[in-house]
Image (tube, rainbow, N blue to C red; front, top):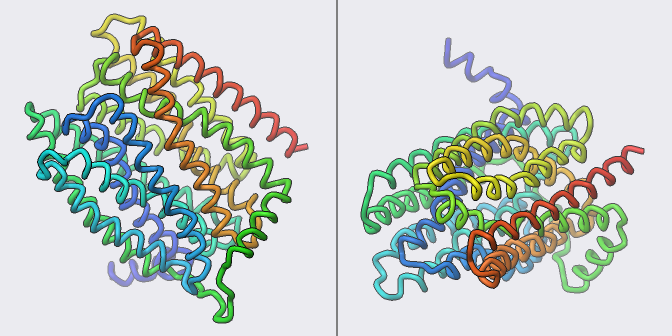
Amino acid sequence: MLRAAVRRHPLLTTRSGRTMLLFAFEGVLLQYITSINNFGNNLYASNLGASDLQIGLVQTVANLAAVALLLPSGLYGERLRSPRALPAFTLAFMGVMYFFYGTVPAMGEMRMTFFFVFLALTSGVLAVYNAQWQTFFGEVVSDPRERNGVYASRNRFMFAVGTLTPLLCGAAMSACVQSIDKLAVLRAFYYTCGAAMLLAALTLSRMPVQARPAGAKGFSLSDAAAALSTAARSRRFRSFFGCIMFFYLSWHVDWSLWFIAQTQYCGMSELNMSVLNALCCVTQLLTIGWFARLNQKRGVGFSLLFGIGGLMLCPLTVCLCLALPHAARPPVFIVLVTLLYAPQSCINLCVVQMLLSAVPERGRSLIVSLYTIVVTLSNSLMPLLGVQLYTWLGASAQALLAINLCVSLWRATALCIFALRWRRQRA
């Protein structure tokens, strides 16, 4: 009877229910490797012997690889009859590359070189997948009214996995004293990332999606130029693109500095950072449902203001901790950042829907890829710029304080821009 009841459950008997479950499972696997990347990549580089400059390059190298691949993948994706073919292949390719990435410590004096090579072929290719996924998601869930619910459900499962994964990894690393032992822990987790990506590729292949018409013409460069011209003439897309890029530039500039602030100035251990990542996911898991309902009532433009507001206050947390005794910095940092990360659960939930609403139908896959190229370039260069500014200003606590105050002011300006944009659209 239990088996029969399970089979009759709406999530299994309806197309939309199965789609929601498959997207949730794909999101779980994707969040697992994303959590390992976010928590482990900088620690992996540090234990391999990376300098501050090389730490800054971690974000840059991965995203420059993505920039090089996004346009060809966007053009090729338009030629395929199946919208899921390229995303599924990308997942399978990353799965294989993670096994090489986990073997980097065994590569002797060339370990840092191979670290950046396979970083590009894992984290870099992940950005390509995310760009293709947005187009794929738009085709699978074609009704804009359903997207908010499906995407919010996927994010709930992702935040749950994001809570447990860094805790497990951080606890395992904190139990080790020597760098070689910490590297062994990270290697094991990267091998599991490879298996997760292969399973995600299999999951994606089960997604119910309609094939494109057999007579559909592949994209040429002239078609690409026409699609770009269409995007440039679209007032809605221009408005969205200009505002979101101003926000992304302010968001990305301190990504590498955030790691330096945690480890060198706030005294955070691997266990502290894993607890922080887990608590942030818990607060986001608790708030994602509220933001999904707020999207239905007030619109995604209004909900996004909460996420930008939380990001605006994060740099001030670093500034506050610099004024505290060293022993008090880790717990204060953890508590404040956990609270400020709660509203950030709405950022991806809102931005993806805003993008799909703003991008023209003609050449959507290509335009989304080009949009992602610009975002990825920001994510490549801005963290390195932040580290360079910190170095030029003396690589001191005063330099860190000055940069974080400027970043907070920048994000406050972005918040004002999006508030005005929401009021204008509402009117």
